[in-house]
Length: 437
Ligand SMILES: Cc1cc2nc3c(=O)[nH]c(=O)nc-3n(C[C@H](O)[C@H](O)[C@H](O)COP(=O)(O)OP(=O)(O)OC[C@H]3O[C@@H](n4cnc5c(N)ncnc54)[C@H](O)[C@@H]3O)c2cc1C
Image 1 (cartoon, rainbow, N blue to C red):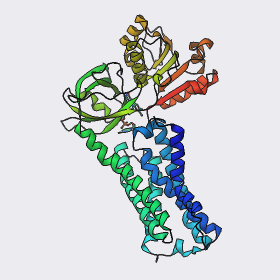
Image 2: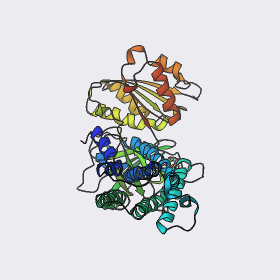
Image 3: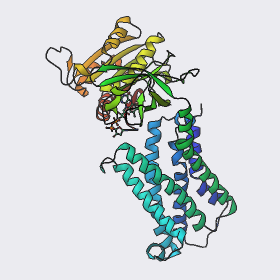
Image 4: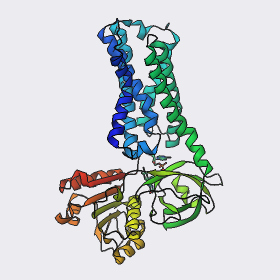
């Protein structure tokens, strides 16, 4: 496996390569320091932007050491950083000697105008990416806009810098082409090559089972002669359901709720939580699906030395923890697990009987505590929210050295993590999955 440190170093090397190129080639300029800083910010931004599609390419060797959630967040931060760098580029050059006309004059060479357009679109890209919900866009609309703008910005930045920096030496021009080649390949791979590859081996829906009033388990089998890909319990995949009857065709990510110990099918357990998932119960056996995975680092198998665990789930956040419990059962893992499972009411508890069966069988040694925030009359279990006081009561001092796996809606995940830290649980021992990338 490619080491995360090595990849991080490679990222720094490639993104800084335009600046390193200037330093190594000792490119001299007759301009002021301010002007040269202005050029450098553009060079740095170009290096960062060139790698943006790579960060979200979902290449396994890029994703595996970090997890897709970390890479997606990093992609977002670096997009903002590149935009800030590029915003300083025109004024620094203008006030550093190129002349104020660079900012104010309408009559400018076409490549300067292209640069203006690229910068404006980059600002639009950042604002829309941060505020798409506030603009009332759906995720799919935002993603389409994002992809179109990305092509224009990356292509435009390449052409602008190629012509505007007309004094670039040959080795730098070569570097420019290499960087653009990386960008282009990552983009084409994600948008064209990978979808084609997935379309050649569609999975088939074997069954759709209703778990609760609004949660469904979809079981998928690979095409004949193909094996299910290897995965760790707790990882997730992207599924594009291809159903008839005018049902939407969208790619969504869901945890793989099955155990990798069984090789006949993979499953996802899906809650009706929005406009797409509310149609999930209309999926039928025989429908097909494109499946891409696995992704993520939320799995106990990545830390083989751990034996004792506390699993904390909120609502549908049980899915990766269930995959881990199933895997522990299937592999007869010697482990102690305390499962704290918070729900609104009893009817929301998913996998209730299977969890009880695993606890009764004793492999792993499973202690289950259900916590309901709004129980029906007659409930004699835990009531309320999983706040600091409740955590302190449920997680005794002897359990605080255990490995904690938390999967819950973002608010609950944050408050549980804070509560655990207050109880003295080490940051290193808390692993969290948030159901948003
Ligand atoms: C790692 C991970 C694992 C998950 N596992 C499960 C699971 O096991 N079971 C489960 O029920 N849910 C799971 N989810 C949540 C699931 O992805 C969303 O509930 C689902 O995409 C909502 O789609 P919707 O259109 O019905 O809802 P909407 O209300 O339209 O969308 C809700 C939010 O989901 C996100 N979203 C919507 N569409 C997409 C998309 N195509 N790609 C990426 N994000 C999108 C957006 O942030 C959006 O605001 C998981 C999420 C992540 C990140």
